[in-house]
Length: 366
Image 1 (tube, rainbow, N blue to C red):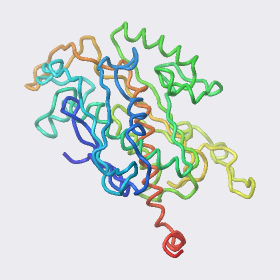
Image 2 (tube, rainbow, N blue to C red):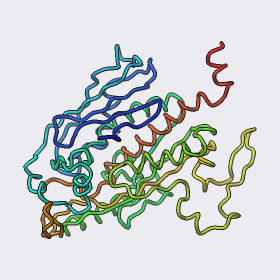
Image 3 (cartoon, rainbow, N blue to C red):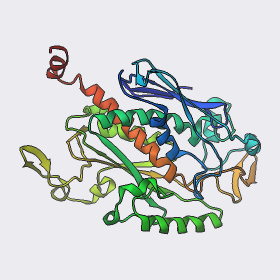
Image 4 (cartoon, rainbow, N blue to C red):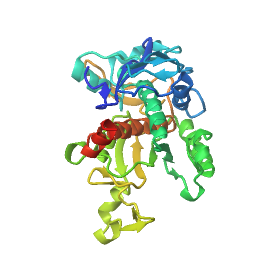
C-alpha cells in the first residue's frame, strides 16, 4: 500500500490500523537538538482522543504515546523518531458483519476494488485512528515552528447550521469547549443541535478553520509546489474532508477585481496589506500576512438507522450499523487540521533555506 509517507525534508510515515495492536509514525528529518518529551506530544493526542465528551465516540482509549527512538537525554538526535500508541479498547466483533457488505459513505467498496481485500475492523487504514500518527508528528512540527515564532491555531468554525461569531472569538475556549469552538455561546447552541441530531439517530458535518501567524513572506514555490496547493493536499488527505478554502475561498468568484485585490502599503518600513482576501498566499508563496484556511467535513457516515447498500456478492440489502461512532467528526479533527498545516509549513520553511545563495553563504561562511 503506497501513500503513507508525507513531506520532503521533514518527512513522516504513519502506520497501523484501527483495531490492530498499535498505531504510530516515523518522523525523519527532524533537526538535532530540539527539546522533546512524551508530554509535548501527549498534549496534542489528548485533543483528538475518543471518549472525552457526549459528542465523541464512547470508545475509551488513553492514546498514550511512547518515544521509541530519535531522542536522547531529552533532545532529538537527528535520527528518525519513532512514536507508538497502543490500542487498548478494540471491540472487533462490532464490525464482523460488515465484512460481507459495503457501508454507505465509507471506503469499504473502494478498498475492495483497489486491493481485493480489506481490514473491515473499524475501517483499518481508512479509520480516523490513522490520524494518531499525523498528530504525534505534527506536535513535533508545532514545537519547532514555535521556536521560530510561527504559531498554528485551528478551531471549529461551524457545526451544521451553527457558526461562531468572530466578535466573540476567545482562543482559550478552543481547548475547553467540547465542540472546539472559540465562541462559548455558539458552542452551547451547537451542542443543543447535536443532541437533536443524536436523538434522530443521525450525524452532522461542519467546518474547521486554521490560522498561521508569524510566517515570513517568501515561503513556498511557484508552479507545482505552491504553498496553498500543498496545504490543500495535506488537508484533503484528512479523512472526511471534502473541500478546502484559502482566504476568502469561494466568495472571490462573485467579486470584481477592484473588490478582491489586497492593496499594498508601507507600515514601519515594512510592506503590508490593507486587507487579506488572499489568505496570506500570493502566487503560491506566503506574503507575510496571516494564512487563513478552511476545511469542510462531511457528516459521520456511520449512523444508527436503516440504510440501503449491496453485499460483496452484489445483492441489494438493508443494514443497521453497530459499533461506537462520533455523531460529528469536526471537534476531534481540529487538531488533525492544525498538525497537517504545521507539517506542511515546516517542510516549506526547511525547503526555503536553499532558495537563495545568500542563505547558503550566511549559514556556511561564518
